[in-house]
Image 1 (tube, rainbow, N blue to C red):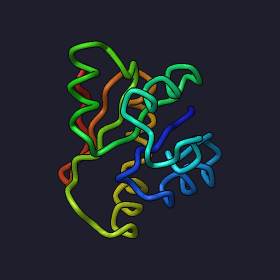
Image 2: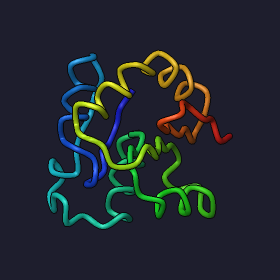
Image 3: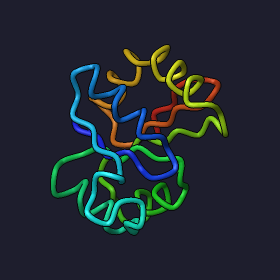
Image 4: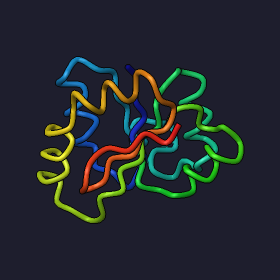
Length: 117
């Protein structure tokens, strides 16, 4: 699996995914870094077959209305420290992977995992 982590999530999440044998970029790795527009993030993800990982509801609206990005992982757990976020992802990781294998839109909240399609 390949991921593109949006600007409001920490680069540490991309490193965590890399450490787990996955291919993850953060918007800081893109040419315009965190100045990249949502459309630029979507274009990059689509071109490279990446799942957009975000907290931004604009990506949800785009996914629902335009099917762009094609694959989306929304983290809707609110504000939390990087360590708590990492722990949340780690605790649900096997379920997240399974959901992303079969769904185009997955949401991770503080309450658990939701498949939207």
